[in-house]
Length: 91
Image (cartoon, rainbow, N blue to C red; front, side, top):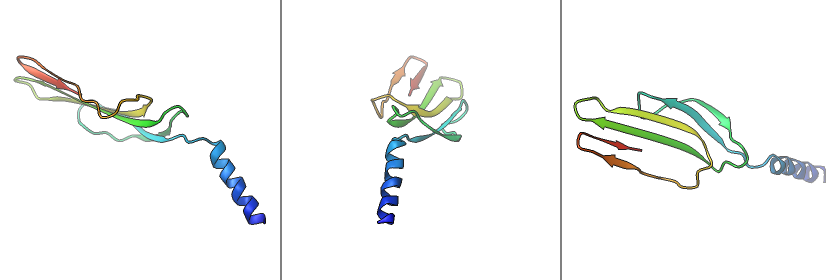
């Protein structure tokens, strides 16, 4: 009986703590990946976000940026691409 009560107590401790997720938070303005510390997100956050940008201009080296953080953005796997006469941008 004591074991059952202890198990129920532990269960309520997890439930009352909510379902907060942990996400890696970092940014790097010179590559397509980064690493950083894990943070506990707000209760409203449902996912982690990784955004990678690639800017290519004719005659120059590509410019990359990566950002990782908690996200409350509903859309996932978004691709944005723009192209011009001398270059392109995608995220």
